[in-house]
Length: 191
Image 1: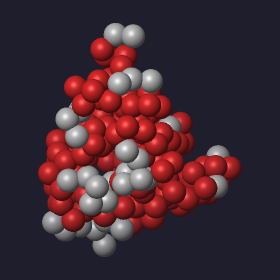
Image 2: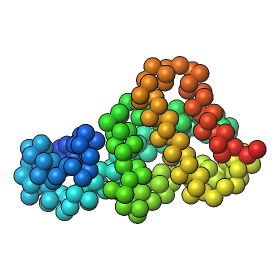
Image 3: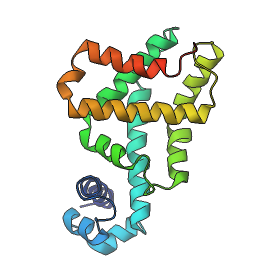
């Protein structure tokens, strides 16, 4: 097994164990054992469990961002484009339930350092902030503080994906898809 394969195996194993057992109940030794690597190999790639967690978080956030950013349309209708992006984001969650469960558990957890969460929100997902600013500039979205809006959008995304992961058949129903976006949009639309 080459080094990149071992690193990815460690990340995949950590993802599974962090979701099933929790961060604090998962030891580096159990990750290494389950991944089939020596503990020293794990520490070669990740000097601490915290660094492993942070790397995993940012890696999955980047994967998520790449996937939904590729779906951005610029039709000239920001609300329609936002709905397309919203549905793409939820579809990513439906297609990647283990990774989404990881986000559910750790996105707002003290297990993830605030600097890492900010890097994810402002760096990796920076395009979302740009879309919110565009909506404010166009007079479509309320002029609330941007960081508060980003956190609120994130919370709504987590709530919607939790609902749809628990009720996957509802994601196939147009009424529920449309309602989930309406709840999202109306929370920040200019009244």
